Length: 353
Image 1: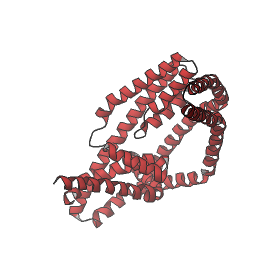
Image 2: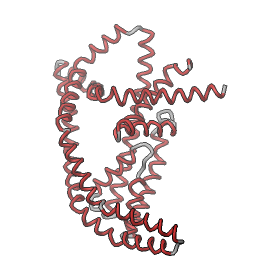
Image 3: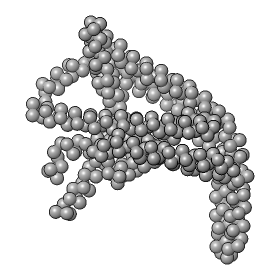
Image 4: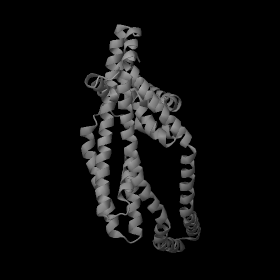
């Protein structure tokens, strides 16, 4: 009985990972604009009905007004945010040489101490340590140049993908308008072609998945909002020059599975200690503790246990997503795995395994 349970768990993990790979690597790149269109049509459904009832608009016109209004609000918010962030990012890039120069003196002192330590060790061990120290600091000497090259390559890649982004956006807007206009007809067609017993089960499963995934998504957005607010206020109190940009980037890293605010704040604090800015280093450590404790306190209340994944399964989905789709896969694969697990848990299929 115990071995059967183990095999069932292994089969579940493999099945969810396989499903996440098929969905994330093969289907999602093609279906994403249409999935966005479906989500937008669902969000716009109540305002569309309201315009049909109150303003006596035809369905297609009400759908067009609501869809265009939603996308206009989205793009307007993104424009204002990008305008703010681009200004801070440009200033940060201009100051990178000065920041790198400020690290030269403390890094040089550390190198001198390590080489002096190696000199006191036995010949074989000391020589190896000295060679390792020299190699490490030599590779780090060109870090600024490598960073500039990376930024330039990233900017070139973004510009090169603009046509794809325009096509994706236009497709998402058109699919949102078409699906919103035809939503009653689509529902009526599905009701005719799906057998009543299957329809009830499918509607129940879809309702549960939508409720749990919607709850998880709202909880994550609330956690990100709280984290961003804490980080922004903390960085402003520490008089960091670009608090909004830094807080946003750290919040995005914190939202990724397994990672957290400490991925950025702890190395940052170490750099401040190396530069002799002890107060700022201590402040960053306190800020990390505040953000981490706040998330730990809020997460159990906002995110139910039934919504999440087993930590091992999360790590597997995270690694598989990164290997197959890069950074985007680190977000898409855990979400896909979560959805597939919800479908598995509430479809009755697990009783047949």
